Image (tube, rainbow over all chains, first blue to last red; front, top):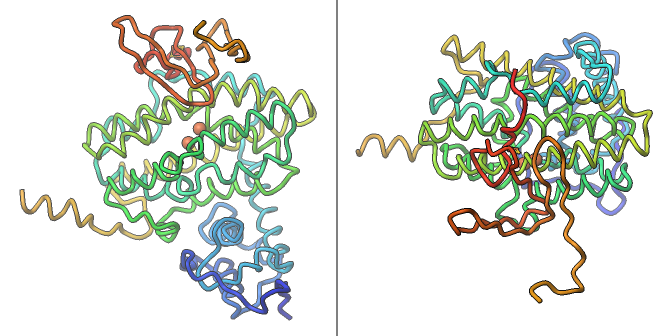
Length: 353
Length: 65
Ligand code: FES
Ligand SMILES: [Fe+2]
Ligand SMILES: [Fe+2]
């Protein structure tokens, strides 16, 4: 029997304006989609054991569950966010994912060690931003932006959930950084908005959720990890560690991506998104290290291992995504599951000039 | 007096390694007399002189390996 919790005010209400449900990538993601549409039962939680934790099916199933907490999906009852059956199923997916994260992650002994490693810039870096700076062509940059749009169009949102779980210096520092991520009170400076402007420069569709079907499992995992850490108070230490890892590594990486945008002539908004992050994240890094991590561990020193886990898990999911992107690109292949539409503006410009 | 006495002192955080952290908004006058401004809640001012976005810190002060 299907168990559904519905709000008391409306017998049935659906979001119409929101992104459409993605195409399923296997039995679990298909079952979640059917449940959200109200056309099928969820499998038993044990069914989650039969598919790979890092694979497309489990990651998309989890992504769909989490998306109900952000913007929902067109045609889906928003009250399903708190549907007990779906939450139980999500818990089984999370258990698999968290176990895989813990198993795959190399964990430093102390927060100091983990942070110190992030603060050293490799002389001969081999990451995605190095590739894009040195060899990136416009099609690589468009693919990269399409993949990353899953996060950047909700930039800072998963981290806002940690605010009620922090106190004192940690809360004040976290709120200040989030305020900056949200444009300091100016809608045209919200980082998600700056990213949409970057996408426009690259001839991409800025519609929220537009590239969900195209995104790799590894991309879904990076966003799922933030949602997992953000939605569970028990994982607040991991969320803080994760956020610190993002902020500490962002500035130098953003510089390389800004160079890639400049070299390829991607456009002023595309350059600006990364230029802004060079500068902003040089500040955010300081605040997150000293105020947020420092403040949290002053209040709750027992969370130090969780902070380390959050830092190292972030490195792990980013490494998996980098390996995926670079493997495809070095072989001259697309990294996306669905090809990007041609850029109408650039195409017509190319034909007329 | 240019500064109102009711203003609370502006906090500047100093570290041996890395930027000066100054509560924003700030206006910085450069050697050539030009000014740059930022209304960020806090700004990081480069002290290592290696930043490519001087006077703002761009993390170029970090150790390389
Ligand atoms: S102090 Fe950070 S770049 Fe100079
Ligand atoms: Fe940002
Ligand atoms: Fe940031």
